[in-house]
Image 1 (cartoon, rainbow, N blue to C red):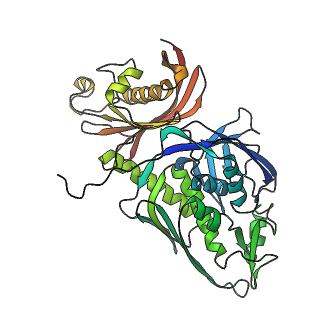
Image 2: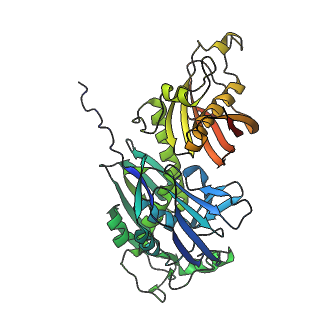
Image 3: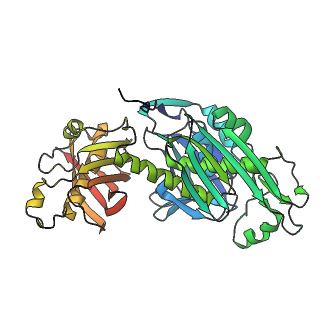
Length: 446
């Protein structure tokens, strides 16, 4: 009997919307009139934005690697397509447990609406949700995860089976232009708590910052209905909904940024003076720690993985040319992660630099291609087909893979059509990137 064994996390099933929801409004920063439609999406696809105003309608997925640093707003970008000020919508989706959604947007910025999340929440609740058959990914923080920049910091501590957030807001007085602001709020994240205590908290700006923001081309859509302007005597043209509304809005922003981790978080988070840049750093550290635990076998096995027998049912490859041992994570048809244990007994080591054995780079590419095949061939419409590789682009071989290494292979779908698949793939060893490429496939009858 093992003492103090960690219980297996009970995952819930993923959800999506029952019906589409439409919003129209002005972007807080761009000032442009924008329309978005939030539609139901397949399990495992996460939250993705489709830029309907751009040719070919590029898709930008809301997840950690796509987060980009922007002044006073969250931005996600894939290639040349980007979407920003998406944090209030993402916070509403995350807090209501809507894991999969396709957001059609005819511009680069999500509408500001009420400057908070309440309008998003009400319409999403009216649409309702439906469960899928796929489990939702879950991550429990086991050791403190800490990020810091100057006087601002965030630490994620082990939780008690839920996500709790504590925010310390501390603004010094500004030469008579703004009074000192010190606020402390803490909440357990539940749908009810979010709707009642966090979603109505509006975005804000200090009066002395307004001119500089406008000079930077920001805040063009801000008005007294969606933005609090804090002056020496408090907010202009508004009354605060709570004395600590500013700190509550900071929690709202943090939840929207944490949504990009793509998992239900079990953690207690303490944030001090932090903003979007530090929130992004925390998301990236959480994803790195989760990846490290998977590689070391410390994380519980994902319910969505595949063992070698299941892999053999999908792929035509056999020893000695089957180059993935186990799929440890499948995120719908969007993303897959697999491992290959590289041993000295690999047949290619007998002839490829046997005195200094290194796994050939072309075989790393083959491992990526095989995992991409698993991802593409899981679709019911692709049953009985083969994924034939016909294009390799943006190849970079960055490090040696040697006997004893565990190769972590990651594949993410860029575009999937009935006869064509396009993926982005990476190989890592010990968290270090050793190879990457973009691969295109033709799907043909077997």
